[in-house]
Length: 426
Image 1 (spheres, rainbow, N blue to C red):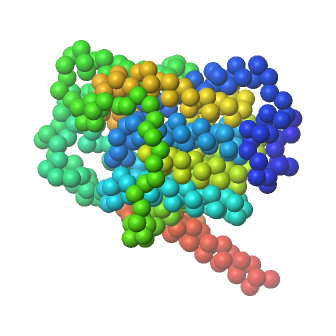
Image 2: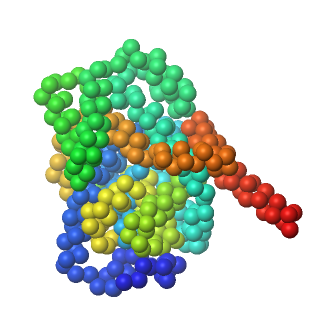
C-alpha cells in the first residue's frame, strides 16, 4: 500500500481514499474498538477543557461530537481526531470573558472560514515551516499558562473578585486567596492527577482519566465532601445536541473579534498539522495538509452552529486512536457517535463530577503537553535558545499570537543573517 506521498497535494478526504482502496469487516472491527477507546478518553477531557475555557462542560462535548465527526469525515489524515484542545483554553477563556459566549461562537465561525480559505488556497503547507524552537516555546508556554488557570479549582480557592487573565496578576490574586484553600478539593484534585499518573505507568491501556474522574465523583458523593461539582456550578448537562443556530452577528462585533479570530486560525492551523505530522510519524503515512485545513475549517463553522468551541486536531487523542488499532477515518467518526451515545445515556451522572478532579486531569495534560526534553535540548544551543526563550516568555506573559509571531521573526532574522554572511564570504 502506498504511503500517500504521491497524493498529498489532492483535495480529497482520506475517508474516500480508504473506502475506494477497499474496506472490510476486519478493519471495521478495529475502527469500532479504536473509536470506543478514544471516546472514553475524550469524554472527561472535553468537559475539563470546556470548564477551564470559561464555558459550560456540555460545550466541550458538542465540540468533540460535531467537530470530531467532520474532521474525520472530511480530513486529510486517516487517523486525526478532532475536538477541543488544551492549547485553546487561554484564547477561548479570554474571548469569552471579553465578548461573551455569542462573541466566542462568532469568533470560532470566522476562524473556521479563515482556515477553510487557507486550505483551499494551498497555503497549508507553509505552516509546516514554522521553526521547531517556536513550536516548542509556545507549547511549553501554553502548558504553564493552563496550569496557572487550574490552580483556583484545584485548591477550591475563593477569590475576592474575578480571576485576572494575565499571568502575574493571576498568581498574585491566587496567592492572596490561599487562606481560603479547600483541603478536600485539593485532595480530590491532587489524588485524581496521581491516579492518572500511576495508571499510565502501571496499566497504560486503561482509561486512566475516566477512572480517576469516576473514583473522585464516588468519593465526593459518599463522603459528602464540601467541594464544587459540575452540577453545583453549571446544573445538569443536556441529553443530546442542541438545535443548530447562527451566532449573534453585527458588523461592530465582527470587527472587534477579528484579532481573536486570527489567533484562533493561526493556532488551529499549527496545532492540527502538528498533530497530523505526529500521526504520520507513528504510521509511516503522509497527510494532505490543505485538505486537513479545509476540514478543520468546516468543523469549526459547524461547531459554532451547535454552540461548541474551537476544534483542532488533538495529538494525545490521535495517538490513542493509532495505538488502539484504528484503520481508517471511520474510527474518528465512531468516536463522535460513541460520545453522543454517552451523553444521551449518562448525562445526569456528570453533575457529580468534582471540578477539582477536572482540574487534576488538566494538570496531567499540562505535564504531557510541555515538551520538556526538547526544551532542555534546545536551550543548550545559543541560536535555538534565542528563538525558544522569547517565544516561551511572550506566550506566558503577553499572549500566544505575539509569542509565535515574535519567535518566527527572530528565526527569520537569523536565516537572513546566515544568507548574507554566506554571500559575503563567497
